[in-house]
Image (cartoon, rainbow, N blue to C red; front, side):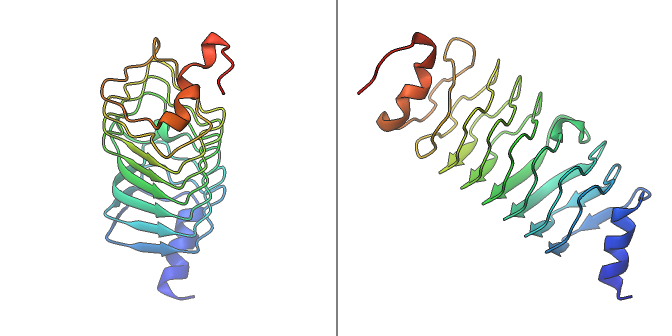
Amino acid sequence: MNEFAQTITRLRTRPRQETFERTLFADCDFAGADLSGLRFEDCRFADCRFSNARLSHTVFNGVHFLRCAMAGLNFFEAYGLVMSVSFEKCALDFCSFHGLALKQTAFNECSLHSAVFTQADLTGACFTRCDLARAVFHQTRLDKADFSSSYNFVIDPDDNSLKKTRFSVLNLAGLLEKYDLEIE
């Protein structure tokens, strides 16, 4: 078994506390893996699967996810309330980011159906061409965030902080949902 395969096997079984720095994980299956207590520093995950992975006290610092299937992950279980991550073309449906500080986080062309962003700080976050159908924003700081190219979101301006948040005139209906208006 080569060294990379041994690393994956260790990650899929209950790992001890380890740090991975500047590592590329490509086409890996972490489904059901217990990633608890691991530290990922300046790592990149490409075409990986994470369904039902456990993230208790996992550290993500400078981590980029590309084309990863991550449905149902509870990122709020990761270590601390601050993460430095970016997502590109990822499936993040049913993920929870409750209470996290995700300032300046990039979500590019991601599916975020039913994702939960309650009480999160998304100041300056960029949602580029993201599908946010049924995503939940409750008491969320969205100041200077960019939703101008995203769609299917519903955000209550009375329940969330939206100072200088960017929207397209084409997606303003998502801000008026609670008023039950007919917009043409």
